[in-house]
Image (cartoon, rainbow, N blue to C red; front, side, top):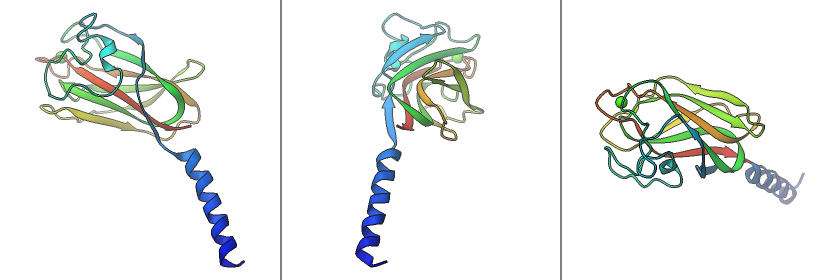
Length: 169
Ligand SMILES: [Ca+2]
């Protein structure tokens, strides 16, 4: 095979592969449900939507907090505009850091799949993007449920500023 033809074949291969495999990173666009919320506006579940807007570590009304500082497990479920084959979920932690215990991916039929469980080693005192990675799902994901341990820090609320889904179309 001569070189120009090989080059054309290779570029065709790579361009079609990259169009399909481009990693899409989406911020949450809607709240599906939440176990509780501290307020109807400040600290409400809707505070996790869109891009980060909590830039300092601490108790900030621009992040979601559950109704009580400590207690039973809490969760928040958010959806995204474009369903994707998901490979990671970013949780922006802004108070009481280190509290994520489980993450579920919700497929387009509404079924829950646990995609991550483990120890969240995120340290306090800074805003941190905790990224849970997992093998790419074989189904399209339209929403995620993040489960947290409100007792991770007994003298703080565990607060989330934003949630981002990583995946391919
Ligand atoms: Ca707490």
